[in-house]
Length: 502
Image (cartoon, rainbow, N blue to C red; front, side):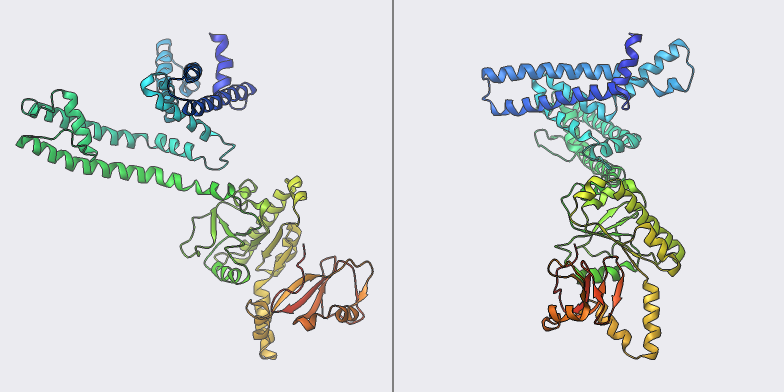
């Protein structure tokens, strides 16, 4: 047996070993087969020869599961043995108590209940095998709801023991008292178990009505049990509220990752001033068509409009970017945080940008499959950090404070210019758009000739500049400026008149 202890322990308790992967693969295959048999049996007529064969095969599988549980418990090594030296009897005691505690873990109890389906009266417990599927980390990467519930039971075991202890004590005391008081006068109470059943039904406020007290003292005991039931339920509600609800709420991190959202916008960071940017986004895009997801480390703020999604996570960690389906997004906005210094805010924005580019570099296969690259817009508060943001991988860097101060200063000398530029930048009237040149051009063409050819002004547009293939902007170029192929136009219009890039 000692020679088998090592391989068995590896097969059931060491996930990094090949033996464990083979053993778990076998168990998964048996679980899927068992579930398939459960479906087939439900479709077959009751008592048919094929149904009896399916039941026989199912019993064999349940027996294998029972053996697997025994091997799992038998190969378990209590952690205390790795820390403390024990005499022979102490080692035996540690082995027994450690295995008993392991056997009483919620995840083991679920498996044991599923195996109890070997008894014909408990065949309905076979459905518990479906819960085994929810334990897979391949399905839930960040928050496994099944594991969270089980972990909550383990971490708050003392609280649940207290609650069930109170329920058991109330049932035992009330049931035995009712039996002793009414056994001679109440034909529905003939055994102690009848009294226990009545006490449990009354304490849990179910009230089937099959047993009711008939004596005055019995009714008094019933009144006490009703009040005790109210306190017991309140105790259970408090324990569940403090231990389970907060844990299950974190499962929302999986919701967006497992969704089918594509072409969405990710906003990395949120503070009290971000709502102004959300107002501008709402004016530019329809949140019902292009979903906007806010991604930050804290819980969803109450002032976030309901049409914007929220995912809790750290955008500076590459391992958490999958939470927002970054590979399926159209653009990323990294706003500067106003609740810290400009240097600290810019450092965080640059780190997020670098993290995004590092993540994309590791997903080269998926990046090549995209029809257009992920566009990253970064807000920088200190002009000295603009080059750092570009080197980190920002496609576009917005110096909001510098732009705002420049408009203020320019408005002092040229009145009304700030108002005019605000109308250009804000959605609602004319706005700046970027469009690709129509046709497949091979040779450069003078800027003036291009304007005459396109006749954009007749459609309500005004060309104000160019974006060269190298990504440089040329504002109001001369008419003889050579426009190279793949150059994009910057123009003013009430709506987009040319196809956008990408």
